[in-house]
Image (tube, rainbow, N blue to C red; front, side, top):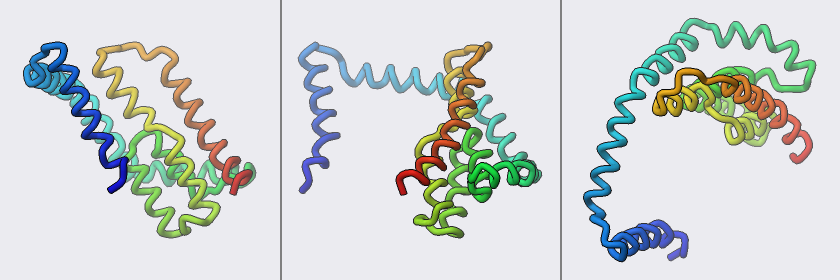
Amino acid sequence: MKITSFVIPTVIAVVFAYGIYKKVDIFEEFLSGAAENMKVAFDILPALIILMTCIGMLNTSGVVAFFTNIISPAAKALGFPPQCLPLTLLRPLSGSGALAVYENIITQYHPDSFIGRVASVIMGSTETTFYTVAVYYGAAKVKNIRHTLLCAIAADITGFVVSCAAVRLFM
């Protein structure tokens, strides 16, 4: 048996032991935290419903394909695989939508191809920006996101460009 299989049970045992040592009602604290998280989940539910509806509309309306066709010539000129453009358009919006596009890329072009490697690096190095902003700012009830979105999109674009450069450099 590997030692890694003992990590999580050990952490849980240490937390319980520390709670008993500090004379904390562990069960009551667990219930209190669970109840508080249910309230947070209920508060952010409207933002999630709107976000998922918008993503579904983008996919079915052909907007992603339209923007992919517009951006493709510039991507080719920069050496970025145009086959990864739908992934770059959906990744900031939806993890599940991006995963579906990623799975399609891997199935069609193979994981060890340049396109597959770029898609893999994109999936591992970028974030679902709009989802994250909606969830966390919604939970914190922040109305003005200020420069967060602009900086996050700049980070996503940087991740897309650097993913292609990293694959070319290291693989």
